[in-house]
Image 1 (tube, rainbow, N blue to C red):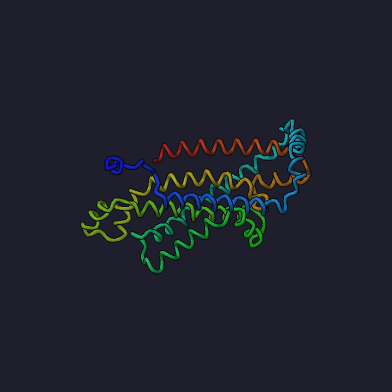
Image 2: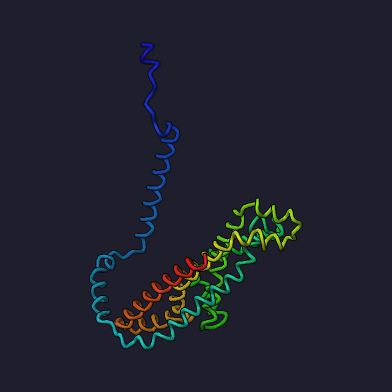
Length: 270
């Protein structure tokens, strides 16, 4: 009897309390999924859902063969799209650079006042999609490329500055302290101690954001911000599906080429 009592119990990954907590979490997750499914079904017309394969086949037949002659009208909108993405990214980088330094704890002028403002700018930029920025700016500035460029810039500020200020907070303090010990000013410490450590991350983030902005700028024309999205909206409005196919192919090739350029530039600069 004493031997049985002294035998070790079977090993378990979780104790009874942790197991009960997991079951409660799973139960809450299932209840949330069921509730979300019921909410979705309230406005869903399942006749259209079951008929969707027929609609896909019908639109697919209308989209083939592509009207390749329409490609001649896409060169200028494609160029506008590239300009929107590139200029918007550059403007966003310029604005994100000081915001990142103001948001980082080890470089901000004031943790109490300046840093919360910088963090609010980052959160506001990241929480609003570029399409919504474009919709608002078109209403303010009117349709055109300027609204698209500013929309891309406003969206890029939060993305670039967030990743950059996190990189600034993770710099090696030994190198910074060594430069500060020489009597360098605060600006010199940033120039020689912080910037060399964060520049590879900053360059990589900027190139990655430009790659993302190529994709996002293709749809800004749907709200009047210029680019190839405007041609897409026009073609879909008149049910010119062969032209839509050509636009899709042009967007796909543009995105592939931009990814290749971004990868080559990243390897060359970092």
